[in-house]
Length: 558
Image 1 (tube, rainbow, N blue to C red):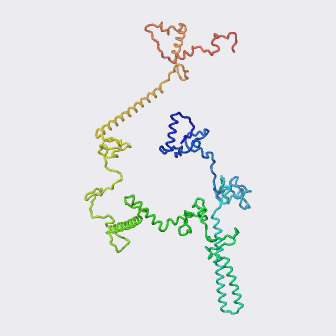
Image 2 (image 1 turned 120 degrees about the vertical axis):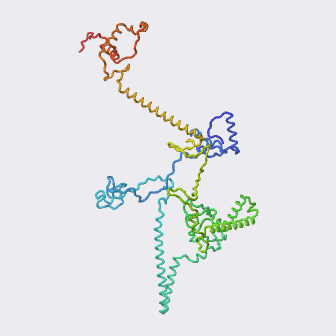
Image 3 (image 1 turned 90 degrees about the horizontal axis):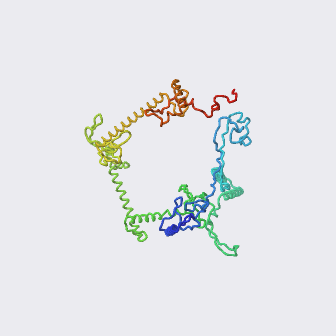
């Protein structure tokens, strides 16, 4: 298949792509997969598989052919009629003054107007209605039966049942009246009275015929009548009545769209339209029902037996030798029944048959597992005499020693880790090192403890040094301001000022390295007093009186 992108390729790459495309079309190479992991048909042409450049689709596939800008479908749900969400105990501000509900105003209230509304009485507060906003789709807006409750039709059925009961009672009364008139007929005589009774009976028969279906219509079902003098020009034909009024069409048994499919051309519905209805109440179970009844099931079982026997090495073929296949299936059925009976008999002989009182019963002591073996224990529960009870075996392997270990995994536990007791190793796949491993483990443990103690001692020393620095007075560093809490020695400060004045007079000759004496050394440490002397003697360019020689230079400073 051609790639979905229109990227330009070199000659060799283009030839390889064409060869891969031909191999995919021939079935020699696996099909290309789209971004969802589905296989792509290699015979799709390139103009269909290539996505437009403005979609920025770098993955192969036909996703750009679908409606990628489609809107979400709406809903077909309906309003929850009569649903309540909250029941208040007292009147709330903004509620209906009549009933006290927050979901409507007084002009929209459906309750009868009260003499004193809930706003003033504060009792009988109505619950809040459930407010819904439905986003109906095209079909939901035009569905005439949307929101219809089928339970409402039960009222119609109840009314119809009541009418039928009344009709039955009236019919019984008429039958009683009819019998009473017949009795009166035998007592009384007279042609006039007999004529009147015959007329009354004829009227009652007419009423009964109106209520029931005519017997002639039922008897004429399936009758073939000849049709003559038709509107088409006298062509004759036959008309057969294939339905009676009590019949229900197949497609009307279940109106759900997802139910069984009805084919109008062949008038067939193969699946069961009402699978939820019990079999005793069904009138139609689908046209495929005949395929799963009668001899069809026997043929299915015979075919299945032939397949299974052929897979297990039997030379059997249902179509080539049907008589042989049927004979083998019958013999297999007999043998299978015999094996079941034999197994049942052996179980009953071993454990007895409690349902048959005449059968031989097994000793109850054997059923409870009681034996004559004598076992004796002391007060601590230790075995003194007899055989120890068998230990229950686990489904996991036990007593398996791996990697030259003499103990099982989990026999050693230390500081939250499991291991082997033979070498105290906590690595499950390690090899056993024996006593040397135990000594090494102890040595490493002691070394680790010593390292931890040394680390703790170093930490304590660092803490002491920090606390000592915090207690000692701070020294002023070069280039920083002198704090207020620093106490200066006045004599040292005067000495420092004097030295600075002498250096200014000499012009810095003492600090000149070429004129320094042989045994003369200078100290680079600066004390707080020297720093203070430097600040007092240094010139400040931002001082407006620094260049005035101490006078006013013709200005009177107030």
